[in-house]
Length: 86
Image 1 (cartoon, rainbow, N blue to C red):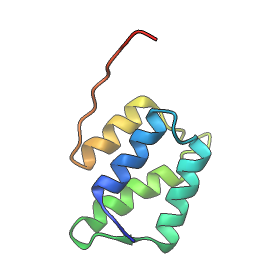
Image 2: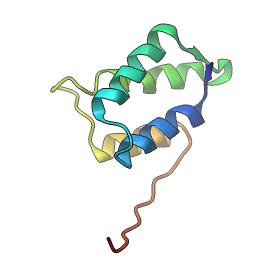
Image 3: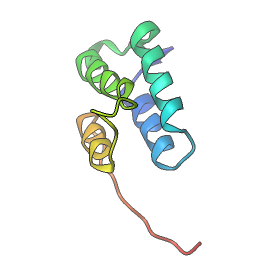
């Protein structure tokens, strides 16, 4: 499966929505770096963003909201927060 900017953005969004744990996101990113096929025209950006996600479980790196926002920006996406009643 070819990994696109949308694929990576969807994974980050799933993490931010608590549909994926950090461990699951990191595992996906590690697998993508090892076995993934990045879309050719965006390969440099995709590999950099996915590599960054792959080390998010290391204390020195972590993964903050701001990190996610910046990574999404690199992919051509913007973030928006919506607060609703529970």
